[in-house]
Amino acid sequence: MQRQCFSSAFLLLLCGMPSLATICDPGKYMALKDDERKAFLDYHNERRKEISDGVAANYVEKLPSARNMYMLKYDCNMEKELAKELDKCSAQVTFTNGYGQNIAKYTNDKFIAIADMKDKIKTAMETWYNPVLYYGLRNRDNIVSDARLYSFANMVYAKTLRIGCAYKECNSKKELYVSCIYNLIGGFPNNVLYESGTPCKKHTDCTTYSPSTCDKAKGLCNYSGRPPRPDGVVCFKIYDCATETEAIKYASTCSLKKSPEGDRPGFGENVFIYPVPNADPIPAFEAATESWWSQVSAAVIKSDVKFDRSLRDKAVDQRGFTQMAWAKSVKIGCAIQTCDQSSFVVCRYSPGGNILNEQIYQPGQVCGGCMASCNITQGLCSFY
Image (cartoon, rainbow, N blue to C red; front, side):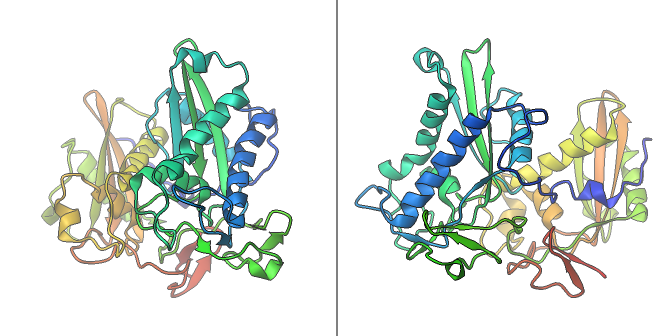
């Protein structure tokens, strides 16, 4: 049995924000050149300015002008994490734990032969943006009601503040993968992309984040603080060694499946099979949590975020995500056990989540429902 009582830092892997940067240190961030980063960033902010000014094309006529449209800033740590994923040479969306992601794969010989990478970057971004020209943002309240607008919505969501991009040449440079990730998902169903109105002319016109400033020349708002978490009342999870003991007991059975609920009263549970025996616990736990959290994008979760019968019984299992996100589960303990040619990862949660007809979390302003205190930088409630 491999056992370790992990610190709370491990539990906050999904909550930690990358440091902010507009110019990346070439000694630390080598995925792109600065002119390529600028090409990604400028294209996004130019489109956001066009929308803010009311001159951006729609399927018919123009998109409504916008108020509270924020300027994107480039995040070098997001780029670095994305570059690691693109090393897998897969066009599958992998950043599903709260990030929006656009990705494109190119195999056309003529496209691959284009000499200037910035031209390829521009083509990828046009591919993501242009669905609004083909299908249109047709809701007068600027609500995403067409899944084909997903990539466009990620690019122009007014509340998004950070972007990181990368590309990867694969298969002897016969394939090119281009991707950007965003600190918020813009393309989820029924999301309001932006408020119709007039571009900012003074700092007090920028009200989404405080304190904000207005770039009068561009009509875009600026916010330099840490990007806030999505609305909701969610507490830190405390690593609990007594809960870990329960996880150890079950992992040692090598059942390789979830235990019956009746065998663990008061505890929720997630399990994961890591395909390496005698595995290092850290990458195994990271793979497990990424697998569970990625279920959020497998199918739509209703806006009331209730764990209802349809969510419990649907063919697409999202219960790993819902247990991780369950706001009332405040303690966690995990274990890993080698079982034949794999490693069995078990996490137990207390009190258990996934309770029928209860909310996964309470929607609302960040930390708005905290009973004790709020960690502002993490956007999570504390118990003291």
